[in-house]
Image (cartoon, rainbow, N blue to C red; front, top):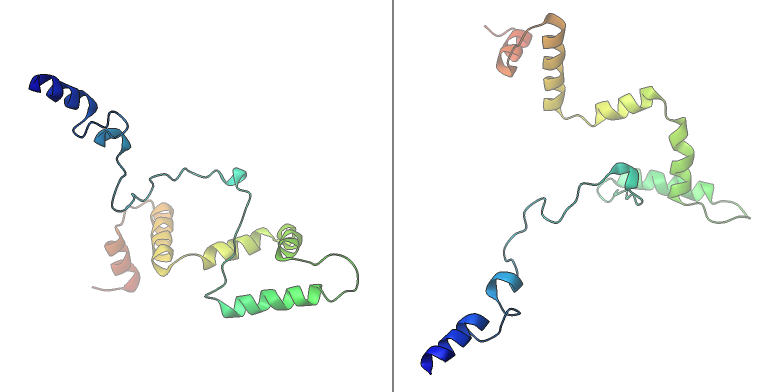
Length: 140
């Protein structure tokens, strides 16, 4: 009789919960999530919403608010929002504007790495970062 109860408990789980309370299947994960867990790669062409955070850039926030206030000084029509301004300005960007933006997004180290890559390509060498800096700075 004890063997039957033991077999019954074993089939259903320790507490007699069955598969629903099985530790393996219904267990919640604890601790930190992995960086990429549950996050799918976004295809930029499928993105529908864009957010602009200027909370740490008061001068940019003020510029946006000033332009929006000027744009909305009118008597007729709906309110002009940031989306309207952005969509009007984007087609006017030139390739030089985009290059300037790209340049502004580089850190100092990325600029040095780019200079190293350009140097290696131009002179067909394979200098390391240290060798390049020694040569560039003229350190003996």
